[in-house]
Length: 178
Image 1 (tube, rainbow, N blue to C red):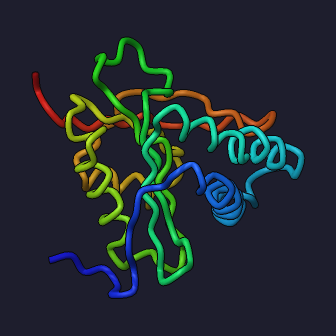
Image 2: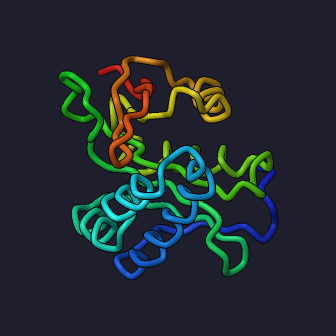
């Protein structure tokens, strides 16, 4: 049985959720990583990666977003879609977890695990041969979470946040062997 909080529920995002996702992503990125960047780099990043337009386009393109709520408050989400990471020759049916965010006060309650489980069981990922994701090299908490869930390091790349370049690891999880 899952150990999630009784008040937490999940649902799939629709086009109507784009603005909420944009605001939440900006909040989460700033809250988690904001202190690492110059203000201008952070603001460039939020404009290019966390805008309503970005989420409108992603949802219109068929990306799948699973939302986690505690009562009426959005506390996390997982966004799934086509491979965007710089992976050489990904299998045609590979997919990517673009983001998985959970408010810090909900860490340690197995909600990240529940979000990931729901993502891996979703239609898009269930049929994928490989699932990729990118994680900041110094984010040990996230890396350990993914390693526990059978993701393995398969590469690295530089992830731009404004003018700053971060070292990211590319992880992959084998879903199916065809």
